[in-house]
Amino acid sequence: MTEAPLPHLVADIGGTNLRLALATRRADGGVALSQMQSRAAQAYSSFEEAARLYLQDLGQPVATAVISVAGRVLGQQVRMTNLGWTLDAAQLAQSLRLERVHLINDLGAAAAAVPALTPDDSTLLWGGAGKPGAEQRIVVVGAGTGLGVAGASLGEGLTRISDTEGGHIAFAPETEQEERIHQRLRQRYGRVSWERLISGPGLMNIYAALHDEGQMVAPLSPEQILAAHDDELAVGAVSVFCQALAAALGDAVLMHGAWQGAYLVGSLPQAVLPWLTSEACRARFCAKGPFAEAVAAVPVRLVRHAQPGLLGAACIALSSASRTPGALAA
Image (cartoon, rainbow, N blue to C red; front, side):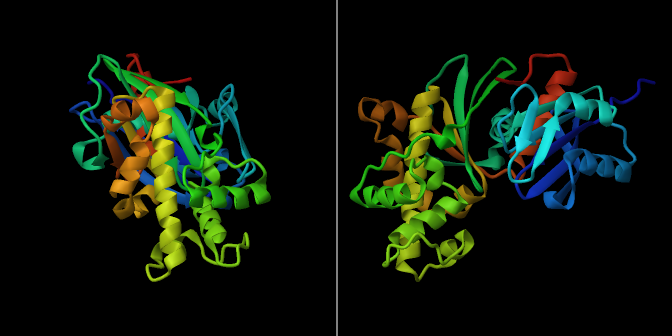
């Protein structure tokens, strides 16, 4: 009897939470995630400690590990600012006694997950059928603690990923209100990136900039701003946030040539869904000068899968294990 292949350890590390799971291939060829756990990252001194305890608790040997990290991966190494963790793929493989460990940026992992999404895993916000072609070029934008951008080329079982630091591209105000917000943020930060507006802290920045006294102090958290439906400034801040997100998403389509699709991931896009479906947001997404018509045809989807980072890490692990063309981080 042929032994079943060992599962793969997959992880998604953010600034606050650490999620771990085992990845296996289903009988129908799909991806299965099991033994999923979410833990407070701050409770551990390193990812190695967290992974070792997780595997010990399960008593389950694994073949490889793919780790999605909220940070810039260089040479299969990453330094996480929020946690103070340093991850080195080669050292982790040795210490955890695995065949190999692969590190990928969290938005890159989310991009790798797109081919595995079911129709129920995403919601169409606006757009057309996209541009047909053998190669499907898409872009994924994630808004949460920060703003992330990744591109991917999909076709014939091959996923090529381009993870970027696109959230740090300079913010381009397009309205008088955005000009005033930009001026206040520039007084505080100097250079103003899209992330200064399109993130949890960014929503607080917008609210503070709209405050009557003009002080760069946000009296409300992002959650409080989103819930303050009777607060005119809060409602205005959410509107600015959503239109900025739509504008940045349209820019990302242009930069990546993502004519086949744009995907939004993260907690904030899901929280502001009623605003995102507005005609104002669609107009900002499409307002790209001579390319307005082309951008308008791009389908925009909100990813509702609970763990796109883990799913993408699993896709990479399984495609690598099968020795077929798989997801490749740029």
